[in-house]
Length: 106
Image (cartoon, rainbow, N blue to C red; front, side):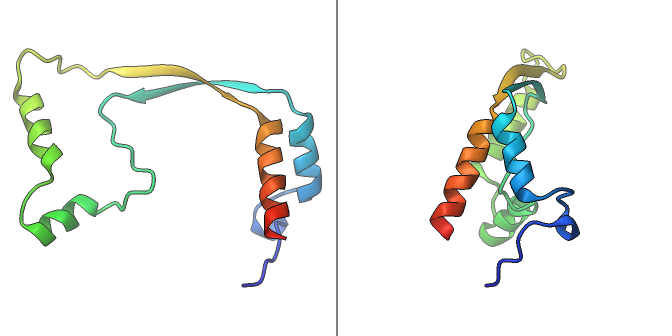
């Protein structure tokens, strides 16, 4: 495996050292995050995982029946709901983590 580095050809528009130095000097940033309740967390999941499960086992996943019963329940609110929270990103902490990983790999 040959490491080619991070350069403009791969998307970074400045030198990686300059980028990390900027991150080390940057103050924490706060973001307001909103998500729709009931939205599946798809990070890391294969897009067709449910269909593959059904084909392999011949049955629906256990959560599918619960989901269907909630949709049919007239006492549960059917309106779209959103959750909102604040997320603080500390660029200095992220940069230190990247530098640590780089040191471990070299």
